[in-house]
Length: 247
Ligand code: HEC
Figure (cartoon, rainbow, N blue to C red):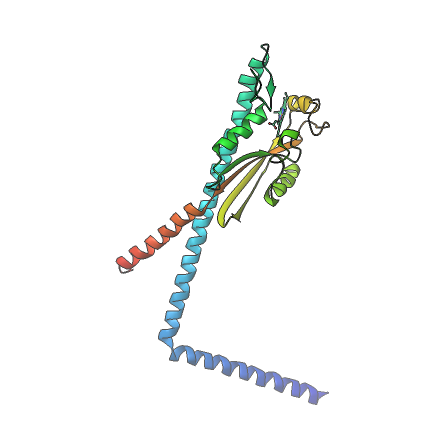
């Protein structure tokens, strides 16, 4: 037993000695190559600096995009509510005016508030630029069955999240067609007047809506590539001016 204990102690001692001598070697290597080592440290430090600057500008670009999306969603929602209160209600009180989704070909008809928002969103969108303002839901009316429903995993995820957290927002930065893109979504919830119509309209795809239910989503998608390029050029510019200043 004591023999085993002693040999264990010896092994520990020699392994310690080896690791100390390894450390010593490393130390010597470092001292021998002090210039190379310092250069390596400078390069690493510089690299870390550039990466953290890039990360910081990325976070700034993202928060700016989120701010823009919040304002855009509020603008679309206010346009829909104001149109509904100040136009639809007043006009509806007069005769011969119908409020409908397919108003385009009907004499004297005007768009439903949701139809109005969908069309304003389409007019503002620029698909070639990757800019999108959209109102969608998982219960589109029959006239919108192709385009009204969620079109990709972001739109499904946003709906699922906002159904559970209707007062929050949902956003994500992802690549679409090789473009870095910021996507943002908020819920549209039902009040008594919404429920009354959606539960009675013949073509309504679901008729058991309750007050507070999430009926759909307003989504804003914006490309970040061009802003990130500006941020990157800004970083390059800083590096260049550092060089010019001898820094
Ligand atoms: C007078 C009836 C009526 C009222 C009131 C009404 N809606 Fe609608 N809603 C419709 C019709 C019709 C459509 C289909 C419009 C279209 O597809 O162009 C629709 C579509 C929608 C959609 C899009 C669904 C989809 O995916 O196609 C949402 C979201 C929506 N309504 C929410 C609301 C909310 C929220 C309110 C209340 C603030 C409301 N609606 C009030 C009739 C109504």
